[in-house]
Length: 104
Length: 323
Image 1: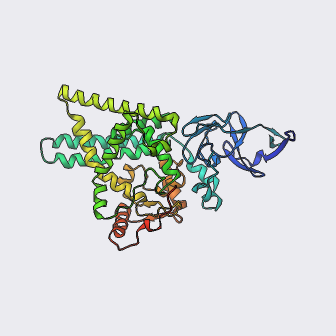
Image 2: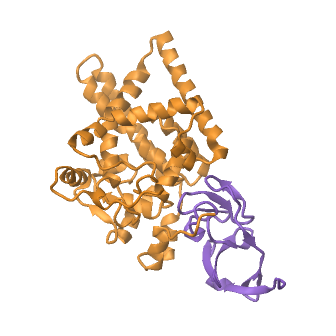
Image 3: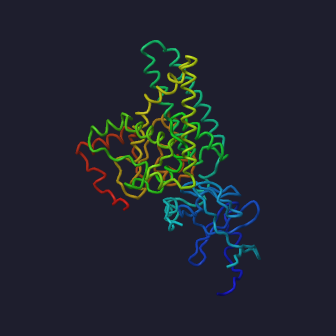
């Protein structure tokens, strides 16, 4: 298995400011969250009903599923309200040279 | 985890019906529209309640209770919005209001939330959608449903069973195991409160809950059944949101009472959009969803045509239920 490396995901300028931006990385569907505590990246699908979370309501801290309004903490991935019970899978991320990068 | 699903709103974004910026604009939350509407709501309840008071002792008390009841049963519309967390920006306020509404109309809020989640996942799919109202077989079935007798029979039976710790197989499908105890507690608390109120009535001779609450709700429920039928009944039992749900144009007072839920197809497209943004969302989606310009009456004309053989029944194209 190869070691994880930092890879460019999206330019910061292309993010939806203070919101969730859907990004395709190969076959992976990811969500980039511009949170009050900085940029975070997670797999975009809700762990309950598998809707794309980027289409939901985001308040800077939590992302609400557009299908059933389950809630996740976009900074940690923690499931915060039913029907979501399984945490979101986060991907380690950083910003470098105006890019959002993920360790993958 | 379930396989990725293409929600109607993602589809609308993909095909350009709606831009992401527009969607995010519609999703913006605020407490103020709900506070404004709730103020008018409470004034309306006071006015219709006053009608009961001034007509007490006369035959007019029955139409007064009916009018009050029509408003009372629309607590369902508010509860429904609350279960989507789209009434108030402050999330816990939705839980508080949803539980109060559920207590008023005897619809336990947590149970309804889980049931309604599956309604949105499997809208109008026989055997999967727990809220599906089947197209009646004939006119007798139509009027029987509107009488609300089967509705109340189901609701009383559900509540009774939950107080005893029993959940049906269907309920076990949409309520996760970890939540079974919550549902049982919810039912027990609700019944205890009802019993306490009835006891107070007997002890004190104060019967206001009967005249201003329970009788009006019973009298008004057929109106809510009439409205609920217009959402999906008579539409095909398929998963295509463009086909299986009706949006109804209704008068301003009815739109007020139902918290804009007459824009039902738009709500199913994007259930996170707050009630006050649904009219704007409708402007974007009106060409892709089913719109009934004649409103609730038009929807029932459509249903009655299907029941009387003047139009092909919508369930003739029913999808195969899940095994």
